[in-house]
Amino acid sequence: MNLSSDPPPQALAARLERVEARSLLRGPARTTARTIAAVAIVPMVAVTLGLALSANHLQHPVAAGLYWSYLVAASMAIGVFWWKRRPGSRFGPLLVVLGILAWMVSWQGAEASLMFDTGVLAEAPFFVLTFYLFLAFPMGHLEPPAARWLMLVLVLGVVAFFLPWALFSPVIAGGGPLTSCAANCPQSVLRIGSASTLVDVAGKAETYAALTITLCVLGVYGWRVHTASRPRRRALMAVAVTSLLFMPAYFIFNFAAWILYLGQGTLDVLAWGIVVTRILLPLGFLIALLQADQFASTALRTLLERLAGRPSPQQWRDSIATALDDDGLRLGYHDPVTGSFREPDGVVLEPPAPDARRRWVPIEREGQPVAAMVIDETLAEDPELVSAAATATVVAVENGSLEGELQATRAAVLEAGDAARRRIERDIHDTAQQRLVALRIQLTLAGEEVEGAQDRARLERLDAEVAQAIDELRSVVHGATPEVLGRDGLAPALEAAVARSPMPVRIHAAGLTRRSAAVETAVYFCCLESLQNAAKHAGRDASVTVHVSQFQGHLGFTVEDDGVGFDPDGVRRGAGLDNLAERLAALGGTLRIDSRPGRGTRVTGHLPA
Image (tube, rainbow, N blue to C red):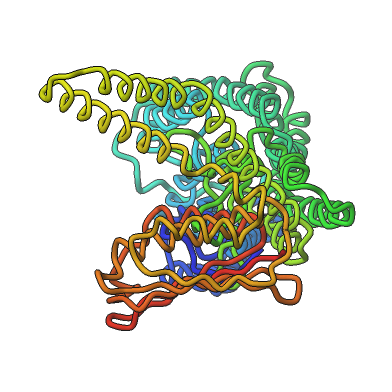
């Protein structure tokens, strides 16, 4: 496939790794934000350790400091890594925000009351964002619609129950085993009044709401795993066996504490389960990303191995669909003649409608179009896998593994069109044309029998009308192969064609040997179309010279006139020449047009004979 041709008129995306970026920040601003987040990890961890180790109120200051430092560093580092690898995804920035909230939670090690209270309050958005990450993974936005309702209920519950507890309690503290105070926690500076009953009711209501929402989130996540495609299911399962373990651990602890009222010893053991599963929480998202890399590498290796079998374009499309697990995938190969993308059956591949839940993915090499895919929109969040398919397709086209098959497909479509035109010509010749000829004979005979001059003139006018109808009918089937071409060859067919030309035409086509019908037909129609264009546009006194020659296994032709010429950049090429160029391309040939104002026009083509 020719990669040196001009790109199609529609705008093409630069590279597959940038599959329709949707990040909150773009370009240099995004890079700057990512760099700031990476650099901030060390000072944030230092502040976390300093606050915890200097705290007088924490029961486990060292463990708390290490635990919080890990959550800060792991969340932000994995978020930066995700952000860099998938800049079009919201998930990287969300993990960075999770790390920032974990850092604010670590302020519970501070002795200053305001900073301590801020750390306790930060547990609410940290908790909400944790739930959001599970429901938004891996697209970066909530799905299905039930997830949006769950998040709305969760946020309303935090506002309705958590804030009253924080505003009316004399002392507030975090809910984890590493945030409990050895002595009294710092007095709350957020307190605006005293309402013990309200605090008690709000605390219990918050617990019941959180337990219910936790069960619902687990149910929605399980439904997503069940209904997901295989690539999506792999990512969801990677998180389910690591990060998502926090959800059942959280539910079991709070159910045991507030529903079953188990002993403190049992609750202490269960509370450490929350600590362990929170340690796993950021790791699951890293594992999902690394797993996607590994699977993409395996898919690429498998696709490259299948190239050894020289698959047809349709077989290659099926291989890509299997690798991406997208049965509805459509794959089109770049047609350098028209600039479009054609599927294996010759149909032009068009970008999907905006509401089709499909995504247009161009495939390029060094800025030149090679192919294009229409894939399920969810695969855009798995760019490593899509990139593997694109890379393998580029290799297939560059190595010529598909070029011959594509050319054969175009040639088969062309031959089918020629056969259809020949059939139409035969049908018209045997029916309508014969009836019109018979009618003209009857008019001639009738004219001989009529004596009146007026009646004879009327019949002559009818005879002329029928003759014109016959000529127009023949022009309708002009695309069919003329009989002389199939019987005598290319040179006699051209000689017969120029005999009807309104301008002087010289034919130089001596010594030609017979070629396949498809090759001779292509050259014949290219010359004929060029002669017709010269008759229309070259000028009244112009003449044309046609050269047809064979050399080194190729058949070439030139149609050159000495007319007025034109500026190729200022004139839009007609559909006729585009169709002929496509006809030549189907046979492995090329068509070129050279012209300058006042210098005439030269149409040159060649194709394998």
